[in-house]
Image (cartoon, rainbow, N blue to C red; front, side, top):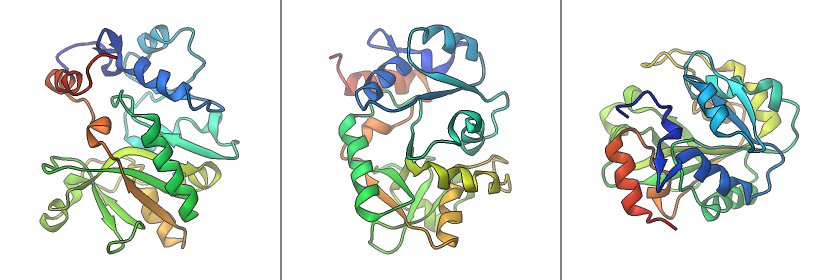
Length: 229
């Protein structure tokens, strides 16, 4: 991002990305909202003063699964669904979240992933379905994928819903035996499948909603795609 500012505090249409996202999530009337913070997390806390959120510290950045592990004290006792979203996708819409939840309930899944289909898949994790069904078998990160898997153009957005108790019953089984030596949240898909539990996937109707921001250019491109409103 060519800046020392935490990524989620970079502004789009004059507002920090994370505030845009949190304002959308607030309309869903969630029971609790936990923001995982790390590098310069104090700045994020200060920016979100007045927001009804709790914070969980991720002192070391050891992957998406590790980020969820850090919420254990705040989340592990919760009965219900947990929505996991990424802070650099500010224009995630309520309609996309509802589509995710509808698929989750309709299929009786323990976890459901919101995917995106792009002509240029870049370095996103690949979605591996059970044939043409809406059953998710695996998510393979780009750096761990062979050439056949890399040709898949259905991608992981990083946005999921989980049965919360089920999520925390397996989160400690993640390991770092992968190319990035990180705890991948996506590995819970394999664990659930190995236990005979249903995992589903549904594509976003508007994939640009869930594209991550990883550069100044990405931020500018997103602002063009989503005019101020």
